[in-house]
Length: 118
View 1 (cartoon, one colour):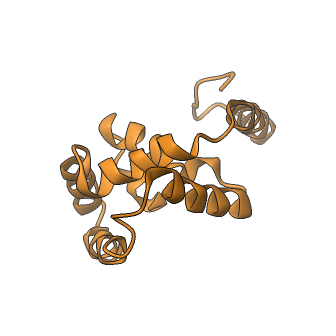
View 2 (view 1 turned 90 degrees about the vertical axis):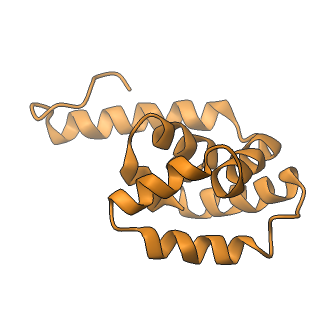
């Protein structure tokens, strides 16, 4: 992002910063295996406790339990297969902020609302 978010940013500045961020995300490409592994870490691995804490803190505990229920049918899939499914969703919604690796990074960095992206 070109500028740090602040209350002083105009709408045009916010749009410009968002466009810059989106362009960087697009240029980075999509590593299906890495995204699948990030999803596994979030739902059943070392990042799972942090995700649970974050979701509870913003009133998303029930939604996390729903996601974990759906995860049961996916958890044995290969990471690259999971990542390919995630890639389809991210692409269809034009939503690079939904990449599991980004959600994980934000959760571990203390940004609890990132759990809304699951």
